[in-house]
Length: 404
Ligand code: PMP
Image (cartoon, rainbow, N blue to C red; front, side, top):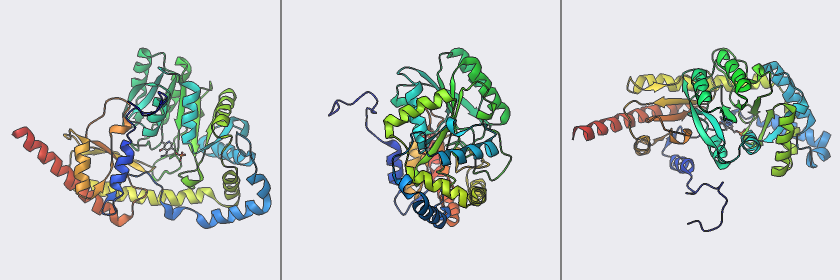
C-alpha cells in the first residue's frame, strides 16, 4: 500500500536498481566500469569560460532573459549546419527544438505518442532510461532482436506483421548504449522504409555517433526518411559536457511544433544562458578538433580494455568491439544469475552494470555493460583482471552446485 495517492506513472516498488548498483560501485576500493560518464579531463573548461565571458559582454541581457521554447535561434542555426555537414540531414532552425538534455526528447516523444497500452518497439537490449520513460506512459514493449550489426530489420519486419498497431520504435543506431553496436546503412534505409510502410514513428537517438575512433561514418536513419516518420535526437553531453543539459530534436514541422508545445508545459524553455554559451563556443573553437581528441582517448581506452579481455577472460566469453562511443557489452556463456556475478565482482572490488535493466522483456543471462571512457588507463588492466577472477569463481561455483 502506497503512503500517498500517486499516479499510475510512478513505479510501484519505488526501488532504483541502477542507483543501488552505482552506490555499491562508488566505494573507492572498487574499480567501477559501471558509470556512463565522459572523461572530465577533456572538458574544454578554459574555452567555455571565455565563451561565457564573451556572452556576458555581448549578449548578457538577452542570455539572462526568458527565451523561446524552441531554443536560441543562433544555436539552432549552428545545429542545422552541423547536421547537414555531418549527418546529411537537410533541415533548418524551424525544424529543430533545443531540449533540456536529450533525455527530455525521449520524455516528450513518449508524452506525444504513447497512450496507456500502446505498443513501443525497442532493441533487445536498449537504453534503460528510455524503458523507464516509455513505461511511465503505459507502453507495452516488443523487443526486437539484435546481432553484432544492431537491430535486425528482418526480425523487425516479422514483429511488424504481428504488431501492426505499433506507434513508436526507439533505436540507438550508433555505438548503442549498452552494447556498443552500430547498425549499417542498409538496415537504416530499411528501417526508414518500414516506418513509412507500417506508419509508425522512429525515435533515432544519436548521442554517441560523433565519438568514432574506427571504421567509417554511417548516414543517419533520418537521412533516409522521406515521409517524416523519423525523429532524430542528439546532445552536447558527449561532445562538450553533460552538465550543460542541452540536446536537440529534429523532426517534421508538425511533430516538432507539437513537441515544443509539450516542452513549454514542462519547463518553458531550456537554459538560455547555456544555449548562448554553446553557440559562442562553436563560433570561437573548432569542435571537430575537440571531438577528434575525445575519440582518440576513448579509442585507446577501448583497445586497452578489449586487449585485456582477450588476455584474461575465459575464451568463450563474447564481447562487442565498438568502433566508437563509451560502452562495450559482455556476455558470459554459462552464467545463470548476473546479480550473483555482480555481487562476486563487488567482493573482488570491481563493478559493471548487469544487463537486466536494459531489457524490456526477457534478459539474456550473463550479460553486462562496461564503460571505458571514464576509466584511467592503469585501472583498466587491474579491473579487467579482477573481473576475470570473479567470472571464473562464479562459473566454478555453478559447476560445483550442478555436480552436487
Ligand atoms: N540517450 C542515450 C542512449 C544515452 O546514453 C543518454 C545518456 N546516458 C541519453 C540519451 C541522455 O543524455 P543527455 O540527456 O545528457 O543528452
